[in-house]
Length: 94
Image (tube, helix red, strand yellow):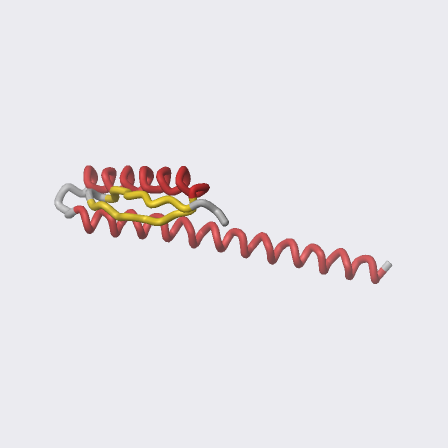
C-alpha cells in the first residue's frame, strides 16, 4: 500500500487540507503554484474582479486546455485506428 500524506495547500488565499499519495505531492504542489500564478495574473489584468471571479476564470482556462488535450488524444487514437484498418485492407487486397 502506498504511503499517504496529509498536506494543506493554499489556493487564492484559502487553505485546503488534502490527503494524498506521497508520490503525488510534487505534482500537486506544482499545480497549486500554477493555479495561484494564474489567479494572480487574472487579478492584475482584471482589477475590478474579486478573487473568486479570478479563480473561476483560471479554472475555466485549465478546463479548456484539458478538453483540447483530450480531444487531441481522441483524434490521434482515431487516426491510429484508421491507419491500422487501412493497412489491413491493403494487405487483403494484395
